[in-house]
Length: 68
Image 1 (cartoon, rainbow, N blue to C red):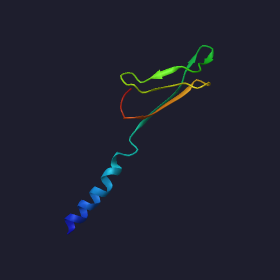
Image 2: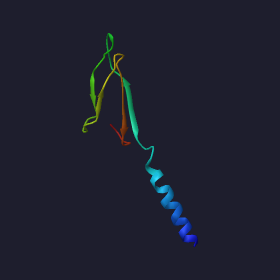
Image 3: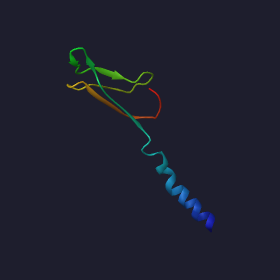
Image 4: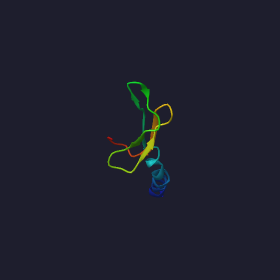
């Protein structure tokens, strides 16, 4: 009976172990004159990317943890 209780807890909490384990890359694109708007940014080796806004800022979320 104790084994079933432990197994139940493992099965209950196992799906939660992978949640919240994504990375975000944020930044600002600038040149010598200030922010650069609407620049295309892509994570090398992936098809994931975005574009900077009018202030030159960008955010790429939902990435697996690692070095990019």
